[in-house]
Length: 348
Image 1 (cartoon, helix red, strand yellow):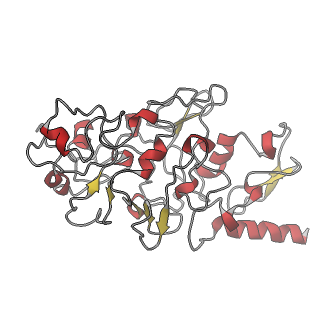
Image 2: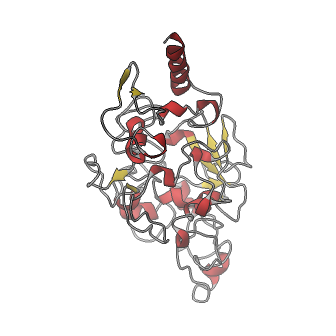
Image 3: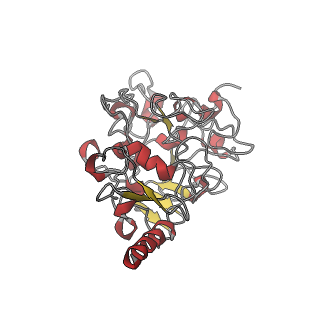
């Protein structure tokens, strides 16, 4: 019994301690008993001092899991101080500031009630059997699961343990922790930080977005560089402005086109417009200057510029950022048009 208690203590240290780098569920922070049970006989609590409780009369789950995959993940990741709260309101407040970088997931109401203000149209919906917009991915039986995007057992070099198999094969999203590395796609200022202010995006290859390429694993046709079949336009966007009728944009680019990279009409984008805002949406930058007083001419929008990856209280997880005021996960109180006007000057 003493040995068992010691093993539990080691597991809790791994759960609550802060590692030198990387995310949880990987390496020495991969604690099997967090998710699996050997004999379906007992489970540890998921809160500080939670102790042990019987597993109950329910039949064991596949793969020796303690619960259905989504419910299992949400045991820690919803309204619990032991891990980031990724569902609905940010009540857990663990490892995060007031605003989560990814926002919040919602659920199919047949499986789980949503928090007030979070609807099934507002981002990624757990247990949803719908086809991913712009793609063909769907789970007709079990619906969307956390492990459709994240590797439960970790991927040491992949940001947020994102998958790198199946439709995501070869789509790596690398990251640096503590000290920025412009050859990596993402910069986390602190280990396992999920706060909006603690994460920014580099652009190691100015012609593409690794983040956007990863999202295209499900949302296939919504991503690409200028000149691609799905995007239209041309690389860099300048020629498309000069001859818009012969090289039209079919969709908003998520890579390869810098804000303000035009020499005449302002209807494409304006760096001055972007620089004029106190509150700015997230962008990629090959120089790592996203937080400078004045952004440079290499800032590039991508998926995260307009959407929260998990979702928020706005339709499609959009970020309504007017440019001033108090920033929340939904923006700063702006309207739909204000998101477009982060970069574009049309309208008044």
